[in-house]
Length: 90
Image (cartoon, rainbow, N blue to C red; front, side, top):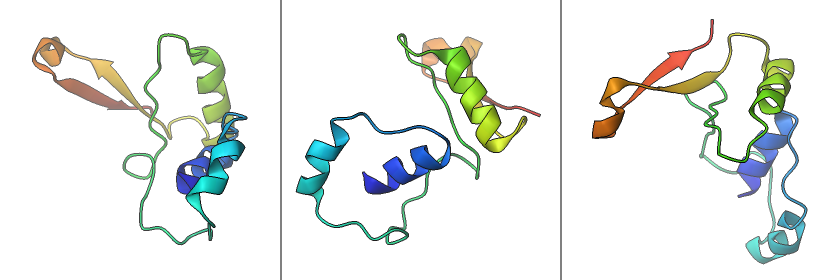
């Protein structure tokens, strides 16, 4: 959880205000103490939700990492079968 929060902060996103309330239950965090990585293929990976400010999120991600350094899912005809086609912005 702490690693995900650190990763989000590095991209300009703060955790929900309630995160601090639950963080005490998770114990102490030593930055860099986890082998878990975030993103996909070294790039931030974003799937928008139904209530997301997609344009605002994309603008913030582009500001943080630059254009062409994001991974986004794109529905494909295989979606009915549970498939996704992945695109990388260039």
